Length: 228
Image (cartoon, rainbow, N blue to C red):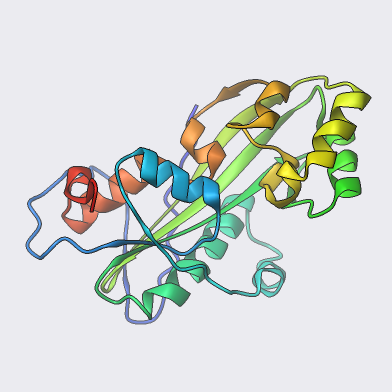
């Protein structure tokens, strides 16, 4: 189940779009580049596997400060605000291109969890989430010119009851240290996911359906960017 919603967080001087009835249109301007405001290999890999070669320009934003300012916000609003901040920071550098910002976090027991960063934190996370269900939230913000499209996607994750030995071995690889929720779907972590209900690309870090809806609202078709 793709539990996506459109959350508008308009920056100054920027018009925010909603996703209602998004339909492709003929572009009235040259096709820009896709700029990914992220250093995530998984997000870049999703675009490349879908025929798009992005410009990689990671954003440097203070995520802790942003979250501190949003203490009363919903989980979806938080991940979308983080994605918005990243996209906006890079859009200033690439004003004529489509800039994509994204942020993913795991919601377990009402608490948002980001990247574990260390082996021991990964083990602790997996001991808490093994055999349980959680939600992976991915916030998206795409900016083109003075328009911003924001949307959050939620995917239900059923974690396997992984053994202590496998949890330790997985944590020792380092693979999940920089991954929201301390897991990957497309690599070693796939062994420990029983099922997902929602968009697989969103779990990996970037929802292709969300990107498509944004490009349509900007007046492009997705095929305009293939091998661009």
